[in-house]
Image (cartoon, rainbow, N blue to C red; front, side, top):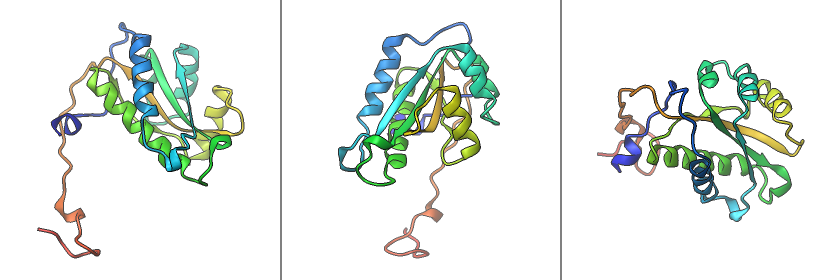
Length: 172
């Protein structure tokens, strides 16, 4: 439990240490173990290591100036050709994204979830930059790097958001 509670979004990375390809594959193995509707696994993953591509993607992400400091990132995409259960791909890809974040944390790799879908002003340029076919929709971009910061841990547990049986019936 402490492992999950200690995961933090990292925005400052050491520029001088690349992530080994073996570790990236481990993160992708974790992603593909995520649950999916009917086990459809309607996802594709783009490993981005080209600095030019990362710099272009930075322009599509208004809250990610740190993209220029990472050596790699993973783009999580929904593949509509693999979709069997309509519109569940975004939920499935979100579960895969969280698995990547947790796997990165387990290896001491910093990461952060950058949302793309459903914001079309981010989806379309990302599709163009990464040369995605029409049936692949980018949902999240996960920059990866060794942390150059230690954010203050924020516990977010809030009993005011827990209801018993129906809304506004507080649980004790």
